Length: 208
Ligand code: FES
Image 1 (spheres, protein in one colour):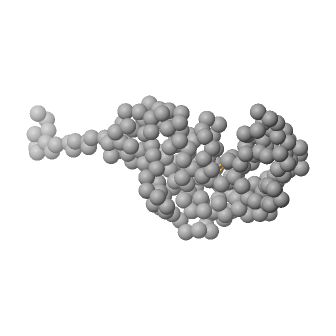
Image 2 (cartoon, helix red, strand yellow):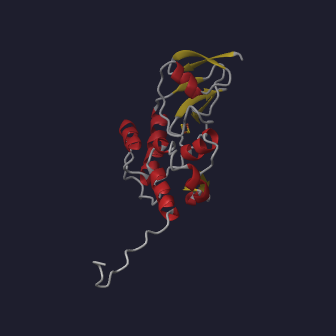
């Protein structure tokens, strides 16, 4: 693999061909926020909080740092007005789903995002896909999956698989930025559990 030389926030950076801007930035200590990125998972590009500005072939674009491969001569800026504005709007949209998420609130402070800008959504999930991809790519179980499309898209546990695989795993829980996953799991678990039989009335013969 050949070496690529690029510039990130004014620093000259050397990276291996095939690596992403995010990896190159991390290699020189430049922090870029991420929500859907995970070292064990294939980059997915769902959350876009890693948006950076990059000059490619004379054109300036906003790109997802976790997906965009490095190129010779690439000039990357990780904090510009446009980048911060993009991250702010992304966070405001996510906070409509999960206004109490600590991870989102911390980022909201950095980018001045208003958690009340958009009307609240009923679904806590921000569709980062960490749980779905971790269960598929790392655990090979596929106990949690996306269903539906567009605004109706959400995650669900597959009851038949979850009942066998999840009770002693739950490795996906700490990955979730919003706790939507735990809620979905416990709902599934409750639906899978046999109903607790009600205590029969003793009808006046309780001492027997
Ligand atoms: Fe890059 Fe989510 S971390 S799109």
